Image (tube, rainbow, N blue to C red; front, side, top):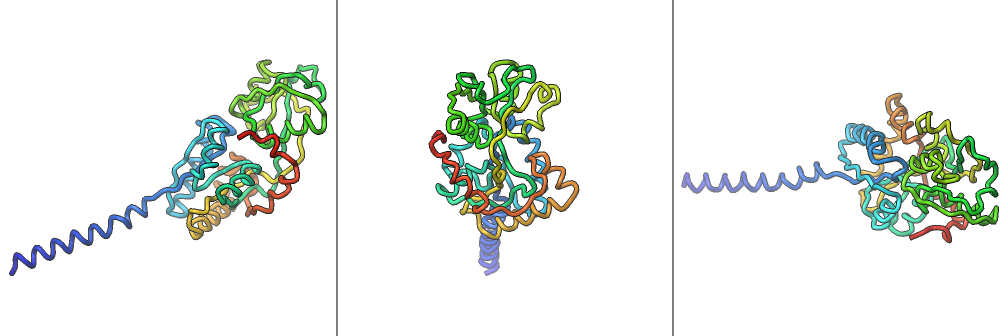
Length: 278
């Protein structure tokens, strides 16, 4: 009888252990975070890993940072819905919402995104019209401010044809122009401002695109709403602290606030679909 009781107790204890395993596994589950590669992988990681570490401390939710080497790689991944959370350009969120239901959570509410075209400071080029037939560097075909908006304006506003050169990142664009490998390059003001002074000071802006709402931090619909709302609240709370503001400024986000899909509706009026490359 005693042996029977011991066996029964042992079975019961094993059953309890098995019951605990799914709970513990769920606690350790992590959500993937994709970041549009405006910078090289090392810099992207140095900016975002501390932010995600802070979010983990605030929420208890775990995050795995998924670095895409190039913007086309990043686009293929969010097209497949591989990211749970993602920081993407404004045109990307329009596309990602239609394809996979991604919705924006937060964005910088203190500034707007606009593209720039730079040349070497000692270049004779002063106007966009002078770029006709010239090599112009871009990070990727579908980088919104750095490529899509400028390429559209070259044709529709200036009637010129350029020879695009895609070099993967914003930093590479500026370096190609500085080294004379391209007559000009497309970027955005925030990435130009983050370049080393010795590079930045060799460049001159000759064109700025129209302004749009900046990059959102978005979520895939498979993430439970309580979790996505928790992350949104934590990001907003981060923006209320000095240490949080410093981390967010590196993205850069000057003042974080709520974002909605309506913020990006004006992009549908720009006719960029014909310039987007799948």
